[in-house]
Amino acid sequence: MQTEATLAQSDVSELDLVKRCQDGDTEAFDELVTRYRTRVFGMIYNMVHSEQDAWDLAQESFLKAWKSIGRFRGQSSFYTWIYRIVMNVTIDWMRKKKIKGGDAEFDDAIQLREIDPASKTVPKTEALPHQAMEREEIRARIEKAIAQLSPEHRAVILMKEIDDMQYHEIAEALGCSIGTVMSRLFYARKKLQSLLRDVYENV
Amino acid sequence: MKTFEEKWTAWLDDQLSGRELSEFEASLPDKAAAQAEKVEAKKLGDLLKRELSAHPLKNEEFFSHQLRERIVQENSELRPERGRRRPTSHWWTIPRLLWAGTASLAVFLICTVLVMHQERPAEESQYLTQILNARVDPVVSPNATVSIFEVKQDHATVLWTEGLQSLPADYAAK
Image 1 (cartoon, each protein chain N blue to C red):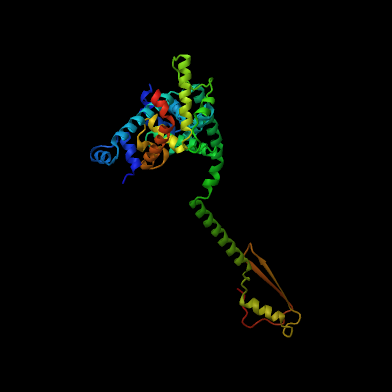
Image 2 (image 1 turned 90 degrees about the vertical axis):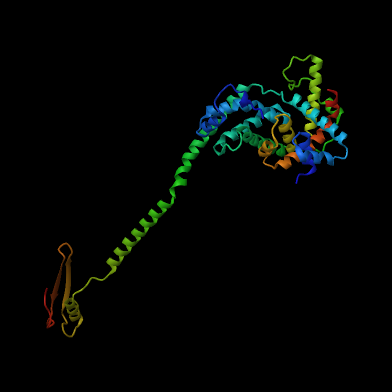
């Protein structure tokens, strides 16, 4: 799994930073946050589809990580460890908000009406206006399709497809078995294939 | 024993190999359809990766700044709380309990000894008893009075008698 840590300019090892954090060094924690904030935010955003909520949940996740850094034993990578916190925080939040997914019918007509032309979800590319709109529509379709999945199924498919995480890493992050991860992936893919077939076939 | 879903997922992700792979592919009723679905799954994965992985975190530095502020606030809230907890959480340790118990027992024993010592009647000499007996015998000494003065500082007791008609025959002053 490629993480921002591998791209980081600093040559300070992750484990050293973690040890310093465990001694109460907030600057070391700041360095870890800098390495992982974009990925953590992106993952949460793809789960909840709201920038403000994703920001708050990412803050909450890092704060929880700071409070419990003393319990990190280095048996897994820091990234997997913090992902577990992120997933707990996010899935708990979704449950409280009663975001379940899975039951609603996927409706293209509704979906197209809901696309906000002023949405800030367009990636930073030099696309032409009509291309940008097209991508925005595609992205909105994908978000709508993911919204049909349960929080656990969303987490699994996003960690596998976006973050290239291995089955055992996903299992660690979600606190479940590898078999459960594979089973959830099976159903999440089936569901998304049925909802997005026209999109990936035509793009 | 893997379920079909697990094997299918592993097969889509190219995680099956060797005998497991050949057995799974042999078990597929329509291998061409399965291959087509595998291609679809790859396309889905590519689509998700392309469209979802580019969502940026705006104001990254503000994000870190806000988090730092929250951590500082968190630490300052925790510190006095820890300070307040320390005396209560550390007072009733086992050694202190033992010391407290031992001290209480010692105080109790000292008090008991003192109280018993004070309540014990002063030892009276045999003669004093006889004299007192004689005093209370109105037949022998009807007008006798006996007074006792004790000078603790000098460890001396003065027996003052008046009106005695007789002294016991075995009387001897020490």
